[in-house]
Length: 459
Image (cartoon, rainbow, N blue to C red; front, side, top):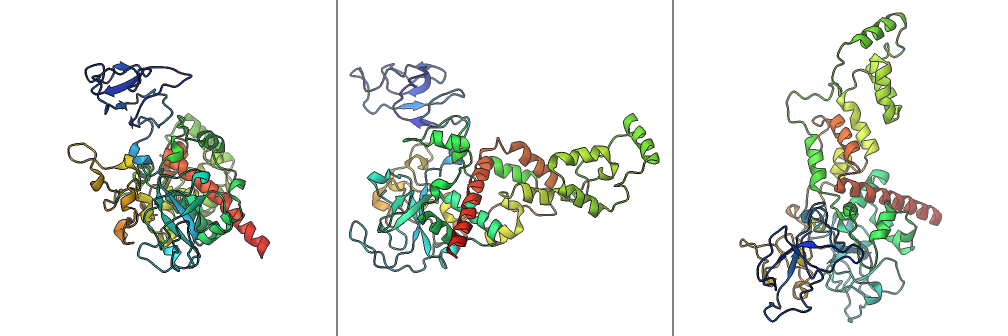
């Protein structure tokens, strides 16, 4: 990540780093590949010719070990630009709660930017923020937009009684994954259950996926450990994940999902010998219909599918379509392959593409940062949460389709399911967006199970 700041060397691994230095005591701009001693802080021992506005732009090399930001060689800024965007899930205002400033939000009523589930739920979404503070310093300020009259949101990891407008902090990305996980497991989107579960102080009982790495990174300040980039990567529209899905869709008119997923076997001595043996010893699978053979394969563990092809020629032809249910079974977080999910949740929330951060300011044609007055969030309409003067009226849109993102759809009869299955198996541990989606999905599965147990106890 390109980082504009004072540079402090790592205490345990002191090394020179690459810099672009303007108006410096060196008297010229350092070229990429030259080195600047990080011990020479711009505020210390600066001569009279040093411009007080001098800044150091850290250009990370592939082996950079700076821990205050992720390396742009391992993850792109575009992929993680919404990672700091936070939102709260809170109960709808009833018209009788007064915040710390004496403001009373009116009774909830529908608004154009509501999500579909909000209308019939007891819960609602707050505006967005990227400057979440510690609870003892809270509440975090400048939630944008002010939704349903709730100006002050008390953001906490846990629920506390008698705290007005208290909300469960989450990423908009994670809410999208949760909705699709509940739809998969319960055939409905259950946001009310999530809020009620949070009120019972159950958050700490979740055994988080990749918990060890998450605990290491989640300190007083986030530790940007190399290899942990996936924890903040977009799980919905990561470029690598999108490319993997798109490449599985076949555009050739000659593609047929009934064709074999594997190339024909070339005749050789071993197959000839095998044919002679099968003439004397009947293959028990050779008389079974193709439908029954596929049913047998579906009951086998994945590692046994290749093995059974080696011992029985009846399984030589395994159609591409056979891997469609395997994708849905083994990778349920690939909702692009699930037409029921795509029909019920055809779009991602408008909140998932909003960037509220000074670092996300757009560049003008000259390559310079736009002015504060021109500063916009990613939708191109509103000011950032870093601009407190414009927060009260900022909103991502009016709930129209153009404010949402439509997930990729994998058509059942035009997708090479074997190719997709093999790609998912190969890249599950290397594609950060895919890895993060699986991580969040597994956490959501635990939460949904806990919600079911909670309701069973209260029944």
